[in-house]
Length: 193
Image (cartoon, rainbow, N blue to C red; front, side, top):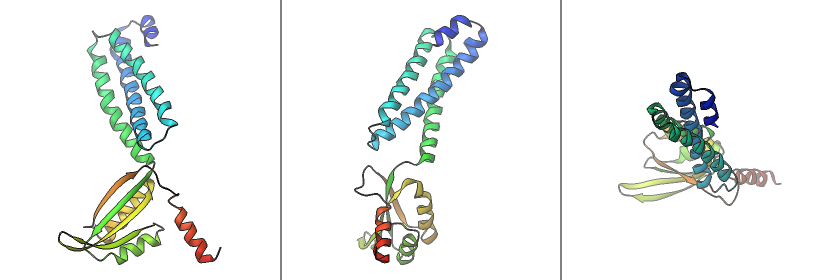
């Protein structure tokens, strides 16, 4: 595809500006698709991962073909490397904003957790908690499985009640029921439905 453009546009502007820009932006797109493909594979999404992989490789082949035919133009190689770096950044930023999936949050706090637990329940987060013995004495441990899109709000609640609380966040590949299922079930039981 790029060969056709080059044959018809052998000007220096095309060779030293337009082609490197095409390579740069094509590489950003290719690597961004690769980032999403990896996320889809990690989350077990069998439908989107192969589609993303197809377009990722298609774009890569077109770009690498153009570079191989123009190895004398070092700007193409710089554009390829810069596109790879920028594509990683763009892919991670977009993936973070899309925030797909479910995460498990574990909170460990030495401070009494009664207020934090109440606030999380008020905000409709399902939690499990217990007291435990830590290396430096008694601690409270709280677990929750939440939609990743709600993680920022969840962490703000933790920090507002105990800025020194230790917490971890892990991706969850599969849950046996929808995360919101238990709250709707609990409301129905209270209402007698």
